Amino acid sequence: MARVIGRKVLYYDRVTSTNDIARSLAEAGEPEGVVVFADKQTAGRGRKGKIWTVPPLSSIQFSVIVRPLIPASEASGLVQMSALSVCEALREFAESIGFPRPISVTLKWPNDVLLNGKKCAGILIETGIEGQALAFAIVGLGINVNFSMREYPDLAEFATTLADEFGHDVDRGALREALLNKLDAYYELFKSENSGRKAIFEAWRSRLATIGQSIRVSTGEGIEEGVALDVDVDGALILQRGEGTIRLYSGDTTVLKGREGRSLS
Ligand code: BTN
Image (cartoon, rainbow, N blue to C red; front, side, top):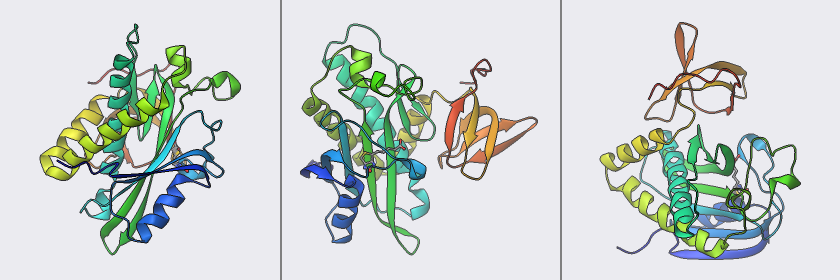
């Protein structure tokens, strides 16, 4: 079947944000699957208005236009689809370069990818909505590749790069290809039928390192603490607080050191 994600790939030296370029293209009617890469973003952004910045030419930063026929309320499935794609692409990439030691690639709710327990990739999904429907979504992905977190001592406790974990720089072109291949495969599954989305949800859930941990979640409206019990198919995190549970839909998660929770499988 013809490839969808990556049917057209645009490379820029320098942009404000690849999400901005992809959004303009989507608003001008470009079909789904168009991918925008940039070597430098002057206004790269993360979730919750954070700045996303990496040294020029060091990493992988791109955005993909998708147009699944789903209600806007189900857009969280795209987070699961893209996080899982990055996770699987990194696992296979590590294998393909013959990395000798086992490497742990897991996910942190809601949409971070962890290498050996530290964030190496982030996902920012922005949407265009018409009525109740999703007209398009822009899946923005940033992966820390060929630089060292030693250059960012404030972040080094929580974040890492591929070069730091593998001990050497890697071929960004090969990694780009691996990422697009996985995104294409999982996007096809996502669009195929409900069972495809269920399979993606189950795979995403099984790779979430967050489940079973005692965590603090900064939601933007406040701070919640408790044990992450599970996730729901709509992407919500089910957090146990005392006797009760609450459901969270977004936030920044930190593990509470010394209070690692039970593994609830
Ligand atoms: C996060 O972890 O908060 C999400 C980070 C997403 C960064 C990527 S880099 C490519 C795309 N363009 C942006 O401005 N942001 C995303």
